[in-house]
Length: 586
Ligand SMILES: [Zn+2]
Image (cartoon, rainbow, N blue to C red; front, side, top):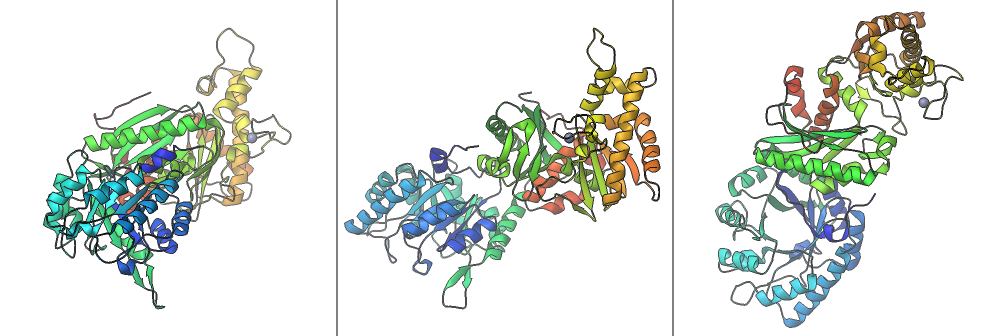
């Protein structure tokens, strides 16, 4: 798997559609890593923050670019502290620094920028110095730093920066703090709506407690802050919790203004995406084909997300996160698909790839685990802490919840109910084992076993639904079904004895066979469990929507707002999508 690094790394993701960006000013590697962990979007990397920040060492820049996973890195180019009026020699040094940073940026996997500012002795932007640095920086975008606030006329200076291709300006509106400069900042922000106008990065005593009000008053989409505290040993260290609080406050501000998330359910032939609001309503949905190469599928899913982000914007919504569920072995902690045979994925860092492509926080989990979580939250297992959710479709997979916690396992392989051996030395399974449960009881297994026993006829071999429909009239169908139920009961008896569930919920098409399924299964399971009661058996309440609902729950978790989903109820989240629904690229 590769992403478009190189030139793409020079392009900043637009914050549109997501919450406002948070940039943290840092002067050491520990600060960079703390900012990344705490959910910041970008760091401004300097040396010597006590001097207001100067060019960091090249060892530092190289190490930071090699260490970050996600955050953009803006590198300060400033040869010394003090004023912003530079000599020709000082400028030559800074040009050389800018060229070296540009060379490092070319191989970086995260967006890299340069932060620079220079003034003339009479308080205007030093246009010649700016052009010289821009030429040295090549394609690396330039942010003009707080030298801007020392200019004689901020609006005039702003237009000058636009004219010289500066992409962003860090400012507190000419005052000591952004709060005092808020009116000027709002004016600059309004002017930034024009094409090729620099973005307004609001800095100056921005804190978790005032950031929401600042965003509200100025309309800014980017904030900058330094979050350092005394280490007690004569230097400053970055305070990770202060960053986390600020990111949360920014997220809360976004959520107050019509937020939504994207839920994606990936299957073997298509990926379905839905735009879901904080009430759990589906506002819009879309789908793309999966298959082809693994890399193509990732690209199509990224396009699906970006289409839905654009759809959200047209509805006046901002997307704050995405949840993606996939079949296979999924490491939910890192959002990595360890293995998914139908999608051609091995060790694909799906969460990171999709986050890079969209600028959104993205969480990835196993489709059946997510569906199980949805059934436990709003469906057939509501209120139960020990649950098995078994999805019986083409294949068979289960999710296990033990004492309220999802069981993932050492290789993310817990819940492979379909491959429990139920017939010693039995028929061969596609997985390489013999006698697996899904060989006998799954959509594919039932169809294959029927076809193997039925006399050859001209018509197509019946699928599982057709076999279920003729159980009462076709002795071969009845036998294949009955043997399948025997196998399933054997597997469920094992499972019951190992994990002791209160309820087993069945999802997937085969489990919707009604009376022909649950009643005979109950009898067989009770017979197999001689000394204990069988758990309650029931069919899923959320049907085929469970995956999407589970993905939406994940998305609000990714957006650091898991409490949003606690107020959801099944009737609301299951209501038909509004007429806004669009199906594209079926
Ligand atoms: Zn198997």
